[in-house]
Amino acid sequence: MKTALLLGLLFSGSIVKANVVTESFYIKNSNPQYLQLLKTRPELTIDHVEAGGFELYGPKGLGKFLTTNNIPHFSMKIASLSAVRGYPSPEETATELKSVTDKYPNLARMFSIGKSVKGRDLWMVKLSKNVKVDDNRPEFKYIANMHGDEIVGRELMVKLIKDLLANYGKDPVITNLLDRSQIYIMPSMNPDGAASVTRGNAKNIDLNRDFPDFSTSDNKDITDGRAPETAAVMNWQKDRHFVLSANFHGGAEVVNYPWDTKADKFPNEAYIKELCLEYAGLAPYIGASTAFDNGITNGFAWYEVNGGMQDWSIFYKKDLQITIEVSNTKWPEYSTVDYYYAQNKPALLKFMERAIP
Ligand SMILES: [Zn+2]
Image 1 (cartoon, protein in one colour):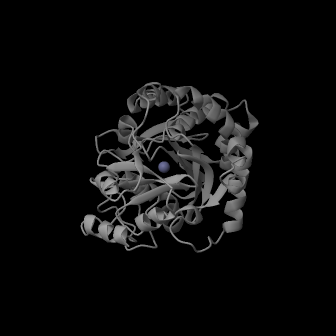
Image 2 (tube, helix red, strand yellow):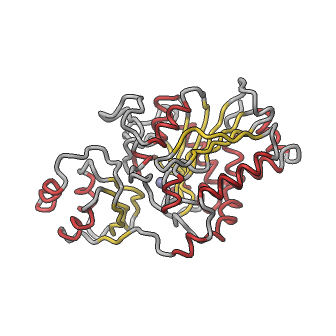
Image 3 (cartoon, protein in one colour):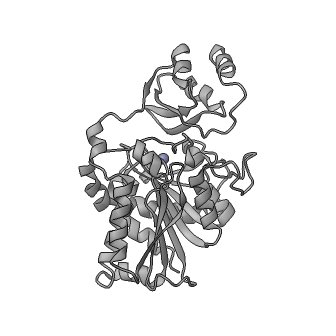
């Protein structure tokens, strides 16, 4: 009770949305009450709840507050600079994507859907036969790296783009995908966060808590007051009709199905669970999870997320989306990326196939 009272005094008022992530900590689950207490605070973001503890994000002063209240915590700042150094910068990634897509003008088109806080382009790659034509073939989408410090998804997307282009006309599965669907891949929704190895954008906004949410007071599908990266995705998606999509994260290894924001059963739960089980089964290290049954989980049952992109896509855009957590370590050594790609490739391709009737 004493702790709850202090929580109220320290963060009373000003910030309502849980999307400011200036300070980040890991809270070990030595006392179950910590999670219950911290959950009640709307300005705090809890992420990746597991048996050993959970991640906690919030405004400036959070660390001081945790110390004052004797809640054990440690900083989430990336441990090894050498791990950071192995990865391309956002600019290097863009240059590489440009050079790859330029080689296949009939199959690939790279374009920017907007600018980040720091003015970086938000690159999207469309892959399809006759790519310049916008036609009635089903639309599919992958978005990665909306949390800047979760980098594996971005690298998987770059490798996937290269693979699809290099093997069109050679691999029947890939040829079929590009012939029969229109694929959109955004390797990095948060290039500023990737550059600084931070979860939030350059203004410390958590993009996966920044979307309209049908179950909260922030339930209007408008871009006012949102981060430019969030607004760019929202505006761009206005003209599209995706039938299926996924977004990629790190910090866990699990495939997450809707809803994230409320406990109600998702209308198509049987189908979406089947897709998740298929993904986890084809990505052996995810399917073999000891933390999650068969490597999948319902979002809300894991932990509540308000303002996430997954639920926004489904509720407002009728775009069926799942969330794929691809690595327990958010920013592993660069040399591990090949392993993650090899493990995920069959699942990535099969999931894309599911957009084709
Ligand atoms: Zn994430």
